[in-house]
Length: 255
Image (cartoon, rainbow, N blue to C red; front, side, top):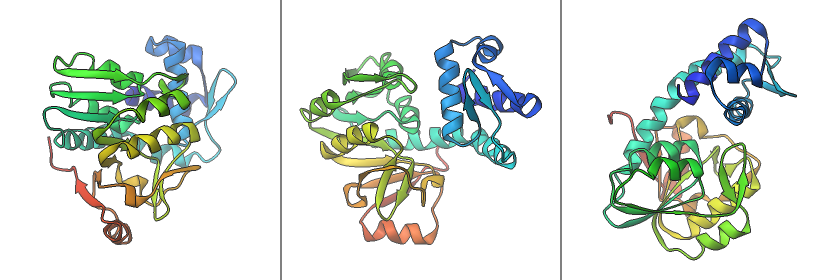
């Protein structure tokens, strides 16, 4: 069962029972405690649950749950469309940077049969790509972020600085006139250096990211060459990106 499917099932359970424990998730879905905790962390980040000691409960505003479930049922398709379109930018022999975002992870699945060098700080990305016969994978070592399984810290930033990449695929939480934002500064510092070391920077973001802002700004719009998204954003965002010479690519229609 994919993470998105598990998360939907967790929300259905919460609608009926109002709370769920990590142990219940492990038993119901036959997953490890680490996997159960990662599911709850992601649900909390999206505002769908409130985590408690040993589990989670529904937030006070229940109408937000339904809207989140509707969006979650589409997120896998959106991300895979964006990821597949992004993979088309890779040419044989390219040196490619992949950050640790879930949308970039969807792209990784379409890179398995490419001939390329991959640099990433994501254990998930490295695991997905490990079956690629013609891929040379460099996992950037550092401190492990246990909830999302990516590596960060000064050692990762220093290692990234040693490489010169053709393309960097970057995920975001928010896109505004002020730039690209992410929730955690440590993650943002790694993304910033990845962008600096790439000739071509491609941001992978579904349309819900436009107009959203998070804690840490890690890049300006002028640092971005292309944004691949699932549908054309509102006119104000189109004009904003045009003013910063950022190309918008719509992934819908690919299969």
